[in-house]
Length: 214
Image (tube, rainbow, N blue to C red; front, side, top):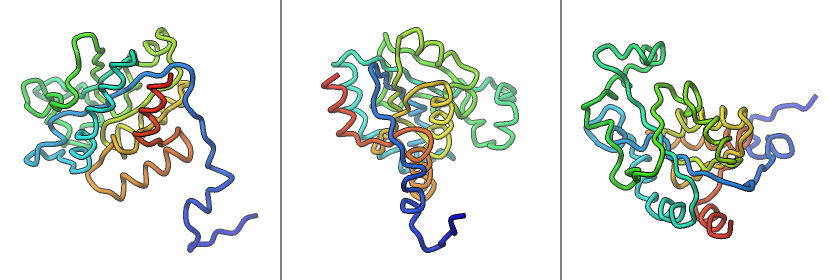
């Protein structure tokens, strides 16, 4: 049995075991996960500096997707006031999410990623964009086999979506520069896990080049 050396870097420990690559498939869609004002407003309890940085990098990717005819799907989080009962146990574990209710400025999309009229918006109540939504069947109907994922937060909705996505049979491609979190430690740890086991973490440059060549 292989011994564990605590001083060995995680990447070296995983090498040859958890370092497979999926690559882009034949048809991609861009999934923009929860880029909402609640994550970029400093006064919000959900405020995450890493999300502010990720949102700022989105215009080029969105423009490329739209110019190349790549389907763009957005998600948002919305609970019914006053008790957010549709959030179930999730809002009991994470009561900070109770702020995401109709009429709150926190539920508005960030200006840089406002959906166009012809772009689908899927409302979710839990972390994964697949859980309790029509996302998987919509992608299948569109012939999509690759989901390019951006949004927030890396350790929450992005990771959960990547896990569910690969289990639904999609190639999950997470764009490093376009996902963000509250703190760099969980951000980097979850990118490492996603890249190791659930999808490919890819650069913005690589993603743009793929879409332009597809």
